[in-house]
Amino acid sequence: MSKGGQTATQQTTQQLNPFVQDLMTRGFSAAQNVASIPYQAYQGPRIAQFRPQEQQAFQMAEQAATSRIGQPQLAQALTAAQQAAGYSPAQFQQNVQGFMSPYQESVVDATMRRLATSAVAFTRPSWPQSKT
Image (spheres, rainbow, N blue to C red):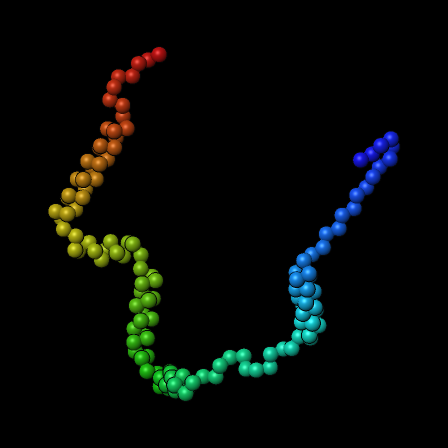
């Protein structure tokens, strides 16, 4: 409180629980010890060695490649992929035309005409419009 221009200050101090203080001191000390250890690079092997079965598989694959096993099948697959890459919708239409039924063509064409007619009729208003 203050009286007539005098001010009073009050100072309080707080202390940590001694148990907590001890834990913090020991933890900080341990952290400093760990931080002072220099980096040691790993000197061991970086990857595991191949097992004997894996080595054998590598040798078999190498033998198959050098003796050209599967070469005819690979050539056939390459030809099929090249033909598929060059295929166009026009070629499909030409190839499938022989399998199309005249009846099916008539049905599809008639249905498409009806849909077009319905779409036009639907978009036109059927009520009389007033001129204002």
